[in-house]
Length: 184
Image (cartoon, rainbow, N blue to C red; front, top):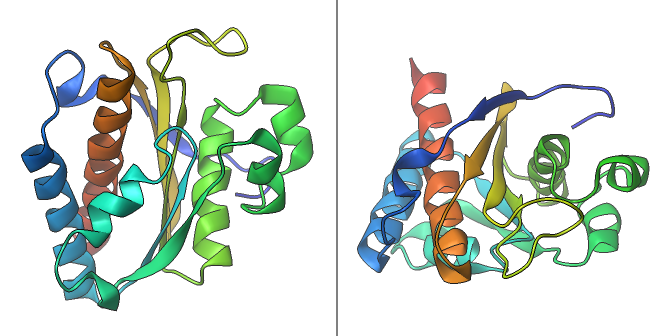
């Protein structure tokens, strides 16, 4: 996302705030997104901080994914968000890594750097402790596509594993929603 550009941001606790997220839910969300991308003959890239590769893993578990998945970046360290994913360094220094504009820039950076139609990103605080004044469970998932992007804020309860799993499901749901909207 260009510096100064704004993404659509929605605050949404999602359907997974307090409930356990199981493998079937993750797999179903991933299968739905992969199926829609395949129907559209479009490609996807991922950029992950909070989820550390589990978003990409959920996607590549779907049979036939090689036709749509370009690849992904795991940029856990803040400086890698700038050097590998193209997030403006001044944005990171001003706002920190857990921020809606950073999430949007991660999604767009992955899209551009991997040559994909769509980029999907996660950033947030899984815990066990707050980070840079941001509470445990604050997560941003973002999607960037041919016609713009969207960011969703999640305020998740539960432990570290739940926050990370719920972030994967919600990122895939956001992507699916944007794909449906782009078709309508």
